[in-house]
Image 1 (tube, rainbow, N blue to C red):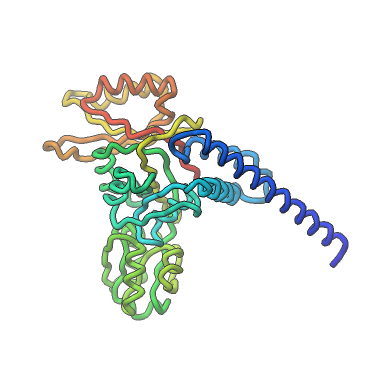
Image 2 (image 1 turned 135 degrees about the vertical axis):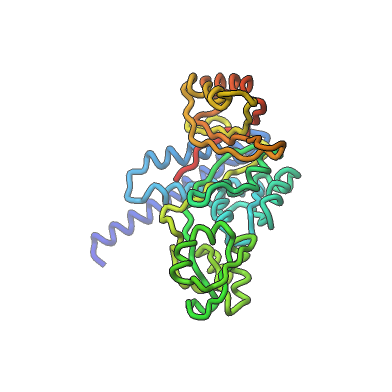
Length: 354
């Protein structure tokens, strides 16, 4: 070993000792905060601010995503010192929903897999879980209808969002394409891989199931079946990957929302989600959106869905820039309430990091 290499390693050891000491000090301070405050141990706006500051300060060579992942785990471990929090997600183990939950809350969180999106909402509404993570839209296939329906009906709020790049894999017990007679996956994933399947497995029967992880579990028991799921699911269910990254759109992304009994305070870079309907008058939609323009509030999403209360009546799901406590947003919301036949504020929350 050269003297130069020995000096570098000695310096690394010293830095490691300092990191351990500082992590201990940080954890103790986090405990002090936990003892001093009442209510939720998880503050989405505070954690979003921490991650943004860390990313902005990052001098390299570590990528920002790697650094924010490390800090998510540090905050997760600190929360776990105080019993931690319980998070429900659309299971079983190995789903993209589980990945999104870990991305948001870290691996030191009590994760509760649920059989359906309805069950996730029920767990949070009854207090069996503090938070829930559910998919709301995909960049390729659009909205998740059941999530939108439940957001309308529930007293829960949206307190966060997670943007997850979704890379689909075809997997089976053998890891060989030959002999695959049926392909199982969630209907959204089958649609996301439609063209690839047409080119490579046109004759295989496509079978929609409740989740990608469930597809992997079933494929593990059937030599003639393959599943479309994540690499995590392949590892969990001991499957071999036939082909990776088979989604038709390389930038395929699913957006998840975090639901809770509360929304989030202002973080400095926020979004507010609304659902509303118009009065049956000429120009009603234009009038409904005018307050946003008047007060300089940007709109990032507008989607119409049947209201199910009458023929040709619609609800509009809208995402706007800013927090409901921001002065211009508060003014716009007040005027929207006057204009709309119905309006529900689903919550304000930090914009998700890509």
